[in-house]
Image (tube, rainbow, N blue to C red):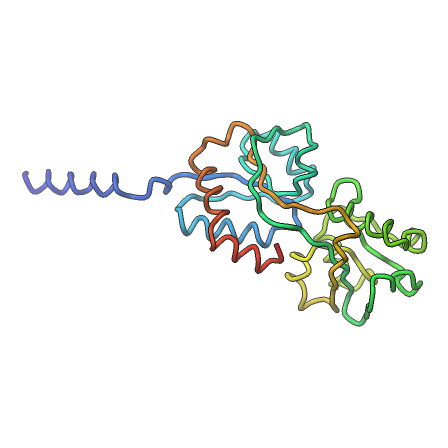
Length: 243
């Protein structure tokens, strides 16, 4: 009997000392263009803390709509200037992630020496993400305007919804060039002809952040995620993905 009581006590102590986060989870959303780094961050965060990270990706307007309707999304990763303007979801604060960089990419078999090459009619199809809702579509439009080549390419622009859709067209060779972010370009570099960074003076700064949805800021899982994003491990992951 005494032995059974001792075993029960040891079991209770074991449970008490087990990781506090083991049964916790947090739901995050992100623009599709940042799926690779966010997914890797989530994986490393779970390994380190035991907190499970549920993830949704897609067009930012869709992510915010899901956040509003479900009331379950705790953190949304995206561009600060965009998140600050939305009125569908209220944020208590923003966790710094990195700086987004616009690139011009092209499919295998093509060659680009300079962004000004786009003025050449041989680039008959130039893909951009949504210039109204996708931050890299907005950045690409700013670049075309500020560089003075917008008029010469306007009739050849092919607008799609997201960065990954531009990538899909580049990989398949359905377009002659496309604007995506550096993170995405690094992820598909083996399947395209190449890419080059656009001069950052020719588009507005892109600050990528994790917007903490109001009401979730005091949750332990969110606080742990905020701490993790400041770690050397997280910075290494983000740097590898061009952020």
